[in-house]
Length: 137
Image (cartoon, rainbow, N blue to C red):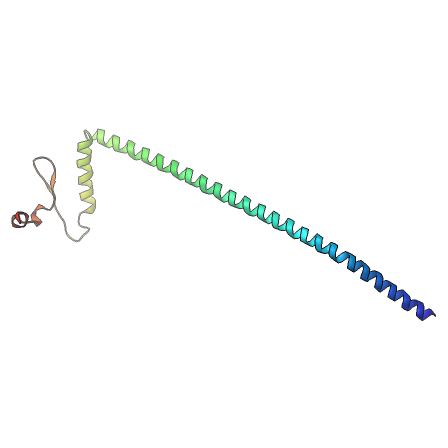
């Protein structure tokens, strides 16, 4: 009888474990789905925070770049104004800038071109290349 009571005890234990599993599995599945939902929600919130921070960084960068451009433009404006005043006005400054550009670009194409100003103070730009016969046609 002793063997029979151990067998009944084992069967009862298996039935109890099976009952707990049958009752516990749906509850565990619900709990697992809730945890997956919470994890997905937290991930979405974190992703949104990252996008907001990236957008804020882009905005800050654009604002600082714009401020730098304005400061550069003001500096260039002030430098141009000082140069124009020191050279006797905007016409002389433009003439100086033109001559400076000629100095910088001289000889870069393998040959040199010399521009000679006319009586009006404006340069003759490559006038010798076009003959008078071609202009009459």
